[in-house]
Length: 250
Image (cartoon, rainbow, N blue to C red; front, top):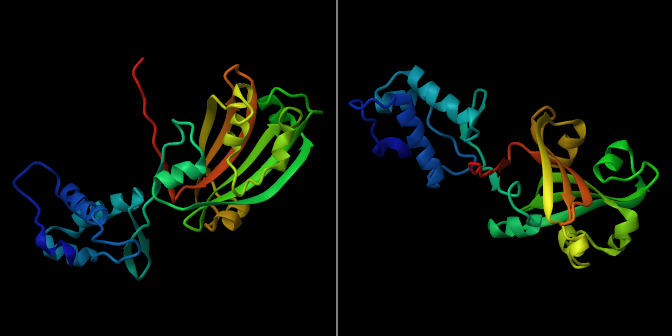
């Protein structure tokens, strides 16, 4: 047991469950417990540190709730795969650039690239009339071969018809827009974030269980003149994604 060389300090006011939790977390972060590996049982940890099973259970439960561990009935407690910490909420950067920066290999599958009439929701987001046409770009994006997010994007067709000639398995939408000048460059994005349950479609597209958490983003991108250029609806696997936000005082 990797934790054999560690001890808990019972002379300090720090709760024992918290000390144990931090020890296990440290071993995971240091790579001593790899993803999918089995950690010691509650009895083993209780005996090793001479603490109650209740104390052990509290530490394990919090690590499970935080996504570091997961339980399988009758088999034990295992180390979860680490979440991909993303900061796209606070910066303008392409998916490929971000994943590459994180040392991962991104790829994109285009499910549909077509022209259609804007529905009420899309027309409102892009300041169009319901009769106006939009480019519909539906993508599934992967990291290291694993599906991470599905994105449905709507772009004004009249203004951006040139995008119909792009290969979005390789091309970046923002780069293709920016290449046409400031009027087409996404300068600012407004995002709505929600936690929702995975649908049957999510289960199929993202290789996850129906009902599990999905991080849903509705984003509208504007140019420097305040004109909306794109409206995107993204659904991220909640078990594989976390998002970083920095808040500054007013």
